[in-house]
Length: 403
Image (cartoon, rainbow, N blue to C red; front, side, top):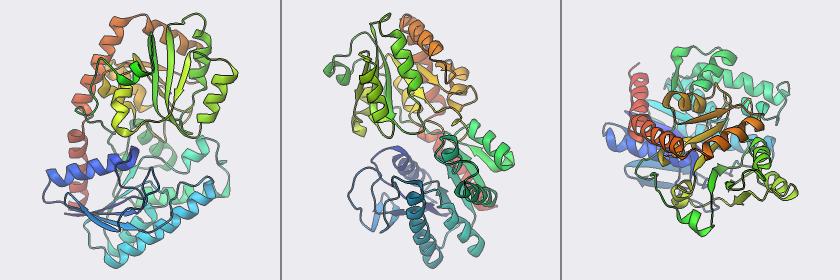
């Protein structure tokens, strides 16, 4: 099988590009009958270096295009630069593409145009992996009004891409239900395949250099990841304010960076939340040690965002063997896993009083924390490893290519 993967970023600087890189390497090593080309940009996801235009990584042929980076400050500029990359990919596919299957991701949002065009002209099917669903992400977060002309145009395009794909892969059941309700996509066209974590890379360590060096005492409630638009930290900060004077042994540690960083720091400073400590994003290699600093791990998601994305860092938390408190809607994939595997507690967004109560109860019950953390690790080992996820992708690719 000749497979072509379309993605703007394909590197090991973290997040989705690294997940995709690891998945591709697993498939290539496990299924020797698979030949893989990757068409990406020469840009790093994190960093300003330029990558070579051609390289071979463990048998994977990576073709990199010289296009601008699409993560720009304005929505319109991001869409415009994303279209430049999409046009370059389409040109490359139509002039050099000889494939059995195309696999396309949502970075940039316009990229499925290239896969759809190639499918219509050459008859090559495509599998569409949705990490972030556009324009729904922008409308849920208030960046775009649902009635804005850009939002309406993108919605129409998105519907076309979804119904043109041979198979649509989503990261959670909440996303599957969103596609059924808002895009009338038949359930048999949708495959739910979650993210994963390497259990040898993230382990349930009992000690942490990060914790020792920063002198974190008492019960540590930790969030480690992006401070992005997807995440709403106001409930967490409100809960910290409620617990500040009554539970001085509980500390909140937020490690990361992103769009909401200044808002978080402003609240911590102006409200004198001395039980909240904010630290910058750490290198990928140090991330497992940061997770080991937690007694309780936090997962947060903006209200209404459960159908358009799933927090990928959640699977790292499972691997770390820590209990999770998730400030998410009950229908989100994270909440469903916590309930099914008894590895944490879900709290509705907008209820900081309840969040403070849950934190207080869990902080005072070390035995329960141990049980929930053990269950989390077992769930990861049984369901959310690269081998299990990679094999499911292979089954989808094989089925689509045969048909």
